[in-house]
Length: 118
Image (tube, rainbow, N blue to C red; front, side):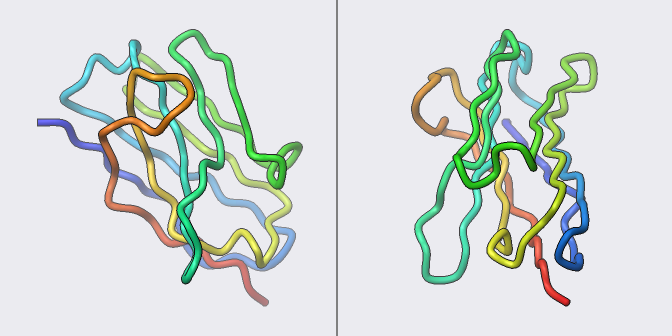
């Protein structure tokens, strides 16, 4: 079955950095659009960043210039490098996999908490 396993979340001070990882199994990883979504308490889940099978990236405006999504097809892993973190980045971050470029795919990870606080 398909599994997406996130890691790398935690508590960080404003201005700090974290790198999230998502290891995928059960899919032909190189064919999939991989995305990172986040959901803060009381808020809707939103797309943060996505990367297509050929490496085209897309970001929500609020993270442009601070976050970078990358994939390693040899390791079936997608990463989210988060720099200059702000308190408003606090959320549960979810990995997502699908075959469409404009909507979330059917596969989700369990989520990893990112808390930005002093």
